[in-house]
Image (cartoon, rainbow, N blue to C red; front, side, top):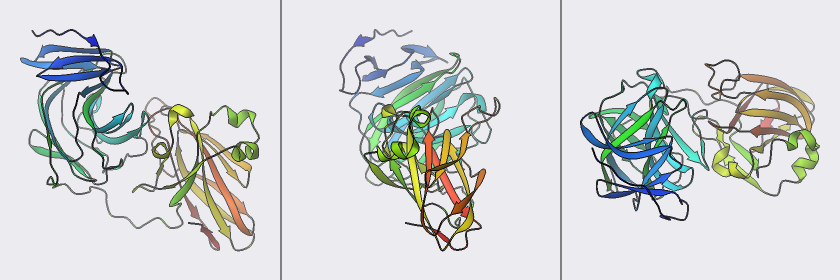
Length: 366
């Protein structure tokens, strides 16, 4: 059995943890409960649990990542990262140990400042049903093009990502593992990284074709972040006036605005997301919306709704994925009206989506 010592090293400004040598490469160990070289199922491997390991000096914008991976224990999540830019900023594809051969046994998600977005990206372009199993070696190949990716397991295409959400930018390659109960682990070996300018993509979107949603919010104005506690101790208009920065955020391909992509969760867990509604005279419309994790909804400064869509906020099986599952009537005045969602995030996805119904004489300003 191979052994290796962990040593403290300042390998990069964003990582002040440890390094581990394996297969002739140095690996940066970031907040990992366990990282060691060992033998698993007859093969030398890098064994890791609960954290991130990066290949020191790796850079990939487009090209291929090949590796052998084994996963053990349940529940657990183990996957590959690419285009890593810092702590919590990367593209990620992972296997859910405990959901083998179920519709969401694998997942694609971007991450921004540590906020992954599986509650935002939960359609067939982000999840797939795969019979990956446990306690066996898988040969995995990730093909990364400009804004797409194909993932292969044992020579078969298992998932296609038609719209990578982070910018096309060279970054680190690494691996990620989450063991909620401490029972799961990931094992990786024989990693090869091959930058290529025009890698071949063969996958196609699995989403069924659907008519565009009418009267949907396509672009949001998103504030700088603040603490959720301020919603309880500060008048809304005072809080809104104190926001110093607003960013225009178009929705993603699923009509959801991924709020984490334009703000930093480490600076505050709540943002204001606004849209302007223009009414031809006083009238009533219905807004149907979804959010994660928690929301307070205001129309022209008046609070209309408070909701909680946290993971397990309904029962132990509840995921908190974002769908337009809530509807609230809006009493609109003639001219411009400001619809504001104060959206707070714990983990799993920070997003909002909304569309108007019964909206004759009402339009959403762009």
